[in-house]
Image (tube, rainbow, N blue to C red):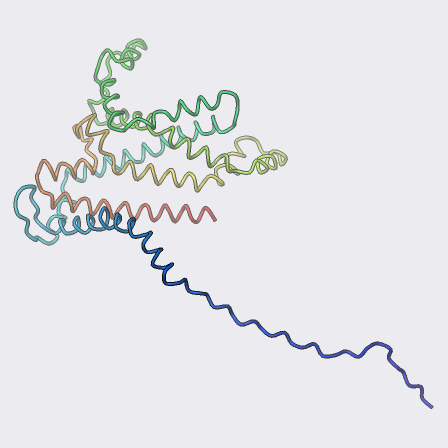
Length: 312
């Protein structure tokens, strides 16, 4: 007779399937909360509409009208955009591009050097940070007047130093090249501390452990700079480049005060001023402004995309 095997383990019962929870529906905010949010945002929306949207629409409308400074306006299509082919405007574009490139490079290098100098907390470094940043508190027009007196007055400390060095009398603003160099030097003195602060913040956000790991791997200071610091600092460098390029393309105060646009030192904004108030043609000035705005939007969008891509 065959032996019957008896299992002592309890019988397995079927596990009931867990019910799949229904997807939670996103609760809509109560009506009063939505209205309260609209109420809070209304003042800022009104300011944007009043200070940006309406002037922008008026600017575009002026650019397609013959709009004298004094007198009635009349539509003239795109005739005002012929100002973009004017030789004076083309020379202003060329000088503005030269100034933008030189200023961005020189200002970026000086600000980066200052940021490396003061990034670490050491005794007395706070005083250096304050001294480097102080020129940023001076208005650009005041800075231009200050440097104009230093360039043009023989009794200024700058010209006395030049004579002491045996260089004689230098015409700081008499030629295109000297005016460009003098303006770049003034802008570097004015903004280097501001960009230094931005770059110093970026440098201090880098993990010190990355530097220690690079030293353990045998990297020298130059290799650490190229392989660690600069790649991690790209978003901050891109931000400073956006600010520098935008400010340089819209340069007006320094050249209007230092040279008045003479010696082919007129920028695009000076050309807009010349069309509006010297030629008394607001329509052509508006057309140049619209073209300048379009270029700035394209450049800023491209640079901001670079910031987002490098920041990932």
